[in-house]
Amino acid sequence: MNKPKANRRNTTLSERMTPCTCCHYPLSNRHHLMGIATYGENRHTIQLCPNCHDLFHLIQAGLVQKKRNSMKLLQQYTEAKGMRDSTFQFLLAKVLEIEEIQETFTWNTLQITEAVREHLARYVPMPKDVNILGTFGVLKDANGVQFKVGAWVSEKALCGQLSESLWVFHFQGTDVTNVEALQVNREG
Image 1: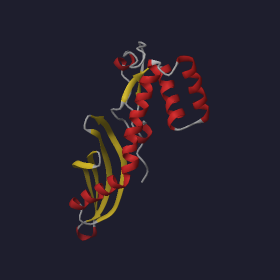
Image 2: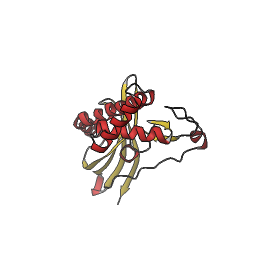
Image 3: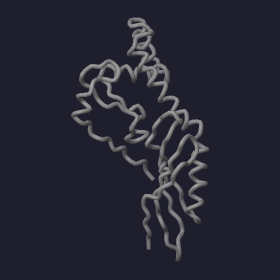
Image 4: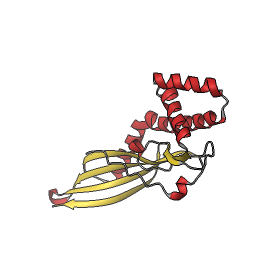
């Protein structure tokens, strides 16, 4: 099954007229801290002007992804502005926050997958196929990282029919806090 295409919400006029969260320039764009291509439309956004947006990606590419050209540019930036530059410090903190959230998934992927399968077994007695679609709705708060995981399931039903359903598992860290069945289709 192909990964669903990310649905990017259109930017509103109000968002465009919101000052940059970092430098307070009067115009900005909504920047997804959690990549929309990977996590879909999510609430992890901040308003950034084009310059701060470029610096965010430069920090991410240089310090996290260790891209050589980005590291050189970042070194030149910090030599010119200094490591205590408020823009640099603000954006570095955002990059590190996102890395912490993404590590939650990287280190706990097997636990999260097992929790989904364990909870599905309570509701789906004879699964034929289970496809975990991905993570979305990521939110970090004082209690940790909250997110949702989607799963598509087909199961054998009565008289050889197949039943297909779409599920959403709400997580707090690696614990399932809620389970929803979104759609059920029966094939003849």
